[in-house]
Length: 272
Ligand SMILES: C[S@@+](CC[C@H](N)C(=O)[O-])C[C@H]1O[C@@H](n2cnc3c(N)ncnc32)[C@H](O)[C@@H]1O
Image 1 (cartoon, rainbow, N blue to C red):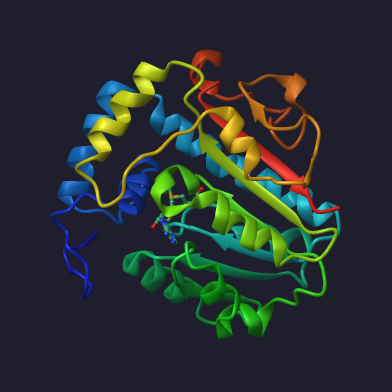
Image 2 (image 1 turned 30 degrees about the vertical axis):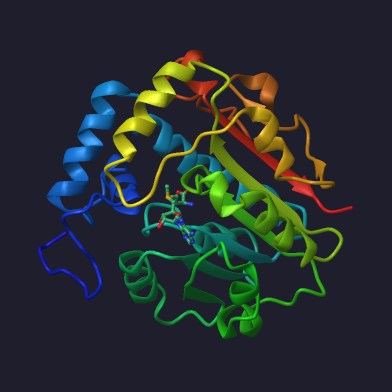
């Protein structure tokens, strides 16, 4: 980031949104973000590939949802603009698509608004996903999304930044409840079932950041879907063609080994 600091931003506290941007090779980060990100990478160098793979997954998930006829997207914890943002993919496969991005980070919101200046089909809300009523009743969401029709809610690499003390199961349920039948919830989340010690080491580093890193057992990640029907193969982890589209790209398998791949979980659920 060319060292202009937006109001309300402390560049000295490592920030999870900007660290993620650094992992992706972006420029919207400060020295404190890069320093902690490098420490994380020293413990787990595959994190860089894992974040890129998550972005590729987002593109495949959005494409899949467009192919199911979904044209409305609510991207919670959307992050700094990167390659293949949700609206870019959605508009490619569904030109009438509408996308609302939500992020609590002021830097993300400012960049999001700058990027989106123009399209009337896309909005950026500076809001906190832990307050679903505020998000769902916001002019940005109400102005673009019709909850009488299917909406896809995305929570990609978001919920592992929210501790249990913030009751993520409750607020995720509030978003599920607000959706019409035929709507979708898609999420990706780091899990603890595989290599728990390595994952715990990363959590230790994040104690210095603005938000904790809270990976969860697969069972708890699956519970975020409530009574939604999981699209085969269900809550996916690992890699390999057996997972199927949209979880793996048949053209190019993930760059890292299966050991690392099994730390990541992703799933898409459909509201009956
Ligand atoms: C790791 S990034 C993921 C970005 C994007 N979803 C992706 O998968 O590429 C997580 C984002 O969630 C945002 N976030 C964390 N807690 C949040 C909250 N309570 N409300 C809204 N956004 C939040 C962070 O600011 C960050 O931009």
